[in-house]
Amino acid sequence: MIRGYVDVLRSYWPMLVFGLLTVFFGNFGQSFFISWFGAPIQEKLGLSASAYGSAYSVATLISGLTIMAIGGLVDKLSLRLFITLIALGLFVASLLMWQMNSLFSLVIALFMLRFFGQGLMPHTAMTVMGRYFSVNRGKSISIAGNGVPLGEMILPSLLVLIIALVGWQNSWLVVALVVIGAYLPTAHWLLHRAGPSEVERLGMEKRLRPDDIPDGSRRTVLKDKRFWLALPLLLAPGFIVTGIFIQQAFILSEKGWSTGLFATSFIVYGGVHWVASLVTGTLVDRYSAARLLIFLGVPLFVGLVLAGTFEGIWVVFIMMTMLGIGIGMTGTIMNALWAEIYGTTHLGAIRSLITALGVISTAASPVLLGLMIDAGITASVLLWSMAAYVLVSLVLARQSFRVWHAPL
Image (tube, rainbow, N blue to C red; front, side, top):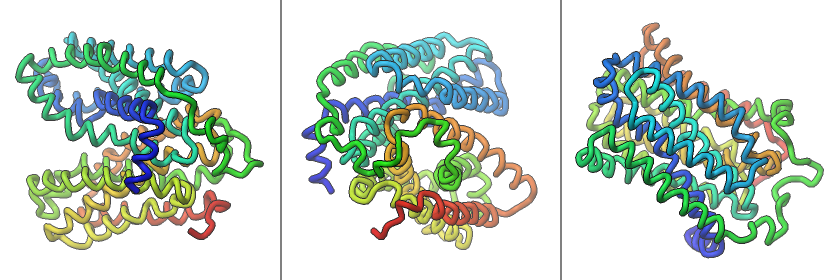
């Protein structure tokens, strides 16, 4: 496995570093980064927790819907122009956070951070990986996708240092300057160094798709019943992980698990997430994402059933291990699947649709789980309910892209 990654890095390092770097800088719009500013923002504007949460949810939902309308431009504009516009948008968003002084300016700044950072940065990187690579598509998506766990490991500690030096609001000026002064010129240099794509070199764009399946548009996807059968499973990992993390206080209290224990388990989660992504990248290149799809929900199902049934300390680590495997598999399989099934001509438009659906799903998860909790169900029933959802999704996915279900 390691040899395969070394070989593809040696041959295509400029484009792979571009993908990794673009996803990494998208972390400035991710929840784990913005969450460090929640308390000081509430204090500065005099916002309650619910008011701040509502502003964040509104900005996130609008961002997801906007991506569905704008994300397809990556198929039409030159990559250098598109990435320049995204970087400039993230630059302006950071400046707005630097000067933010009202609820209205907060919502606008959060929307732009979520749209350009959490949304368009990884969207562009994954679209490019899917289009640029064919034989090594799984590995390339895995390498680029590791920009997220890399950011989770590096940015919090670095941010604490920057805030200590210049203050929380001035730190956004630092972010703005790094985006415009470091990321943008480096991205252009890497794109200049990148040579012909793997698809062009090997002439194997349709290796993983039957010749009689034309490149599909977003309309093709929406009319394909196989897509709707697979969708619940593809959305399951993000829906479940978001719900568990947001409602962790209730689950920990019911199960008798301490917050310190849960925090420690995040180390396991992050490590497993990273390893699962790398392993899945190799498996996708060997068997195809469509063949691996039906295995996607298995770790989630096992982890949720065990967590709902048992209460020992060991269960926390098993659950987080299974969630990490599920999330690690999802990013690589989902991003490779659309290129395999529908081609790369309209890949940006297709991915923007999926991104929007994913955002809506993760936004709905805490609300739906909250309603179940308010209705009086126990944590075990909550976890079993999510396991049942995964099981139904697995059955539906089995009936989706059936033409690909050849024996492994």
